[in-house]
Length: 226
Image (tube, rainbow, N blue to C red):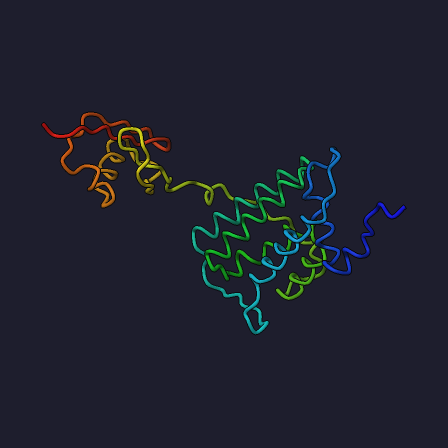
């Protein structure tokens, strides 16, 4: 009755991996989900962005053997932990969401470390096996990516060393800044009041009260000097 979507047409335009990824991205597998082909473009762009991590503008493999940054290692191990947990719970849609976030972060970090990027094909293989196999072969992997050992995350890379908080003056957030994750309330207040952005809010003011809760809030109560 012409009221169905022919998957062959989607595969022809976007590839089998995009269709497979999109079907899992729609929502939990046990629930019914509305079909909307407009969302396929997003999955297609994600796969292209993943592919672009590995190649330069001339189409050459652009990986290096340099040590990855702490941010890149954190992104990778956060992804491993999330995908591993979600697959066990059949939460494929949240796995894919986490993958999209990770690819965006690695792109912003300009990550080209083989240590990090050689793990991604193994993680994406359950969702997009064709692109995973191509990347695995390009990286010199042996056999099929589906037979590769599943990566394990390490908690040491997931420890937060800093936290971003909004600095409040009289209950209103005036600017954001990073604080050491282990900073004491006294240290948080000292850092906040000595920040260049704080100068205009402290000029001509007396500090009458401070509230600092690690990893949660920094509030400085001020009033005009007498």
